[in-house]
Image (cartoon, rainbow, N blue to C red; front, top):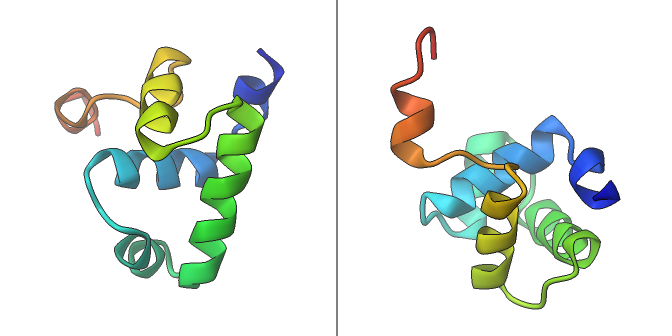
Amino acid sequence: MEAANRGNGRDRDVLRLLYQGLDDATVARRLGVSHRTVQRRVQRIMTDLGVSGRFALGAKAQELGLIFGINQSANSPGG
């Protein structure tokens, strides 16, 4: 899928933090960007992936391999 290939590192960072249950404001602080930037990025990712809700976004992103499970990324060698 083209949208999955277009996902950049920052998009994946946003998705991973949202997957951990963080709100937009906390994601923005962690990434050093504005709250509005996170909102726009989430909306764009949702449009790119063809989903209409955050739950669907998480499911689709995981299905496409754009995010890893919290434990999986934390326990990977060297990571």
